[in-house]
Image 1 (cartoon, rainbow, N blue to C red):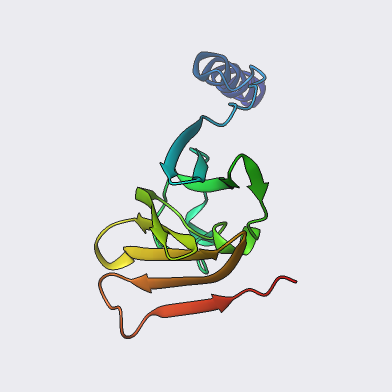
Image 2 (spheres, rainbow, N blue to C red):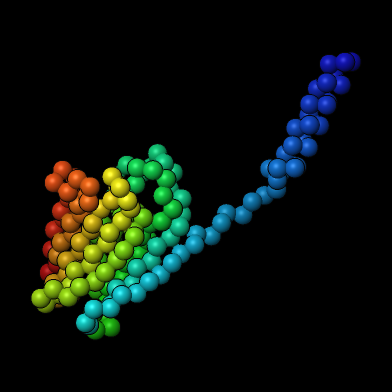
Length: 158
């Protein structure tokens, strides 16, 4: 009998704890907070959308700017030339976390998008080169170790 009373008291405390902490309440998932900014250079217009979704720490390998939990990632990059949207491969921007500064500069018959992200040992500079209406190249370099940690991707469009 004493055992049943102790068990019932333990269950009561557990139920009370769940109710007080809100654990019994269904929680609606938070909508990601998105930010959108625009830059212009000549006939080019860049629209960059970032989201503030949390990325779990264990999932950060293979991302630029992330060996720790970060809250900001580039979700979408849209580029326009004279009002017409250009194709930008997702691989040119999707692995860039925690962007700090973004700029677009005219270069010859195209432009270059420069994204500086993260800080300290995880900091990087990404450069996306556009010639005419085609993305031609993306390079990313660690700002802390530029000779040791970098990658370059070439794109070809007919």
